[in-house]
Image (cartoon, rainbow, N blue to C red; front, side, top):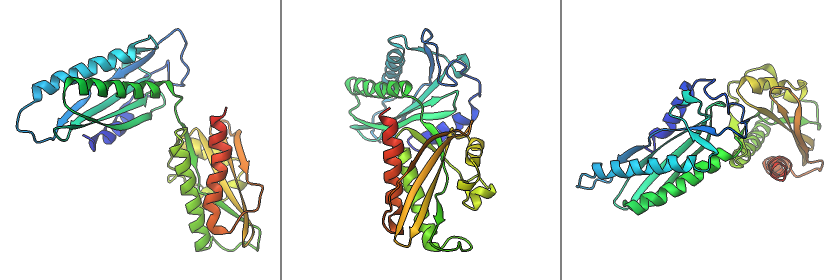
Length: 300
């Protein structure tokens, strides 16, 4: 169950109708109208190897779990239960439970934003025991996480392109030196990790972008073409980062974020200070993005 659920999420994203949730497709819902949520039956798998057949007991407890889950999601009137996505659900909840031993069970739940076709939550939980009390406790915890995901703004789909080098120390050579390429790759990967772990952003794969400005690492000079490229990849925003080498032992770093639809600059940052040698590009890039983008957004 734990291995198959991510695949199930991917399949659901492929088959969900594009216009299935007009009320929540853009994340704007009239205050007087509850948001539709479709809650699929969770799967159950017992791999504990216990000799007694507990199928009937587990079916009963799973049914009670699902009844409570749907009840708690709809409580308060902010959300309404929709039988299917086609019935106007803005979100879809799927999941499963697996018993791995006498005292240990795992639960996995995912929330999909139907209109945006994005997974906004996917978490794995463990709970001890296989009695009514343990199942009730698990439901209380899972529904709390689901409600938090439903209420939170969806993560911004961000295309983070490979960091580029602006070398002011000498006439540019043909291509990047191996060490420069390695340090830029480290900076890019670290920035993507920091942004993804913040929960505010969902990092979009840019591997399918083959435009000349991407291949030549010259997005900084293409007059904002990164926004249109990011839009083709399904991103909401684009980010380009530039390391400017001032001398062999000094550099500055900067980034710029654009709206993929309008091309407008929504955020930018520059270290403005000369920092250490090339091996510290990663540290400088992560610090700048964390301070000027992640932390700044959290304070708004």
